[in-house]
Image 1: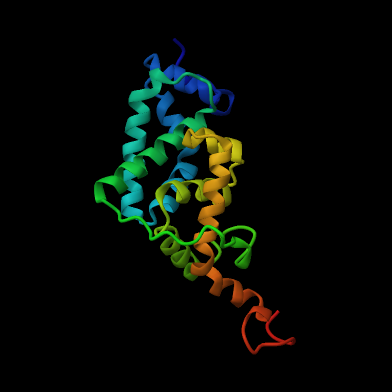
Image 2 (image 1 turned 135 degrees about the horizontal axis):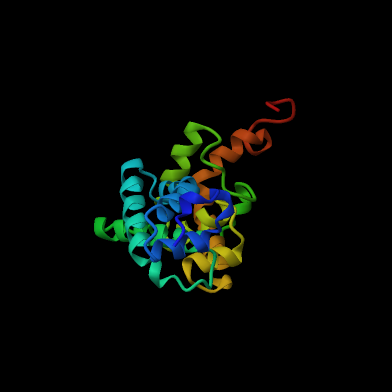
Length: 206
């Protein structure tokens, strides 16, 4: 078998890299992880909100993917398969830590009070801390759906493949997660829109 190192990396599709790894190519898996490491790390960090926990989860996920490559069925993109393994690794770490679920709030609240989309935690350090803190109060299923759709830019269908649930379930989890986040992040909305702050009328901050 020709080693992946003898071909240009960008000429080797993800599925071929995974197949070559399963067949014993010593270079293929490292190339695959290097290609997708940044987004895998982003999923882990945003899901767990802690760098050390995220690093451990990512290491667990890479080891799981390394061992499970031969069972990849090819019915989804390799990136979807990798991100599914990362999400599962994060869930395993949360289960081991026995994270207490958030107290349910009414599902009739709407995320529109804050913004159409969750604030990206890369926008500012303070927002990042608040978003991670708020996300940590959500049930894991809602948190994972929101991270994939609102923060990672996945379509509902792609997020459904990662989490292995129907698209309608993703929509429901996102809607409920946004509703729970609304009162936790509304102060950021107020900072951006002076009209939402009591006693402030036109002529405020742009």
